[in-house]
Image 1 (spheres, rainbow, N blue to C red):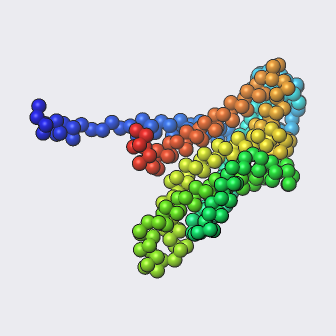
Image 2: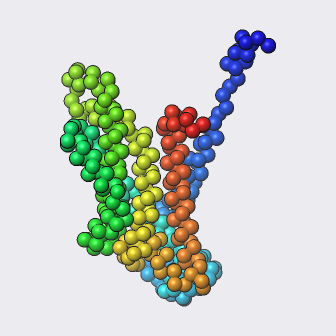
Length: 290
């Protein structure tokens, strides 16, 4: 076989469809997060029992009336799980919206900074990122009343530094391109450049990062609720359920295992979605990983 034949055969051989296989990552993540999201949506219109109903008896096992049993106060565990899933999504979505609004605004403004101002802004964002998110959230919640709204605000503000740092780096790369110089030469205003060039070019990476921030926000809210700084009773946050069930784990393990498993599955599902979005929105990264 000649070199020409080998070249022709190579050109005719189709490349393996690796991206199609990797799409299962996104599908799996959507299924895991979607099932828990469905549980949260159902809790808005229907619950098996009232959140403060303690008529089920203390620490009963799974039975016909109580699918997963009851806790030490006689409350239905499945009802608490449904309520906790709603609180988890409210915390995750609310925190991400706050982080996106504050972080994108600060990041874009920081991208225009030059010289000492640029160094100062960069150092300030690095300090905020190095500060533990949960500790910063605890300080903000401690200054306010312990509630779900305070927890969401605290987590969102803490995560906004990470978003701002990322947006600053990405926006600076876009602003250094030649077509930005051409747009400015033609008289295009900076707001139109940001809306027409900067944001459309950074949103794929930004969406992936916000998906990851969602999972971190859910974990942070669970941590705050575990410490008594999240949604107050009778709201059944997964973190509060874990805290209340730790003393009865040996005799009634479902009270701790059920919220812990759902928390892990939700975070894994969101991380898989972020990984799938990274492949779908960044073909270059997909080729490098292949």
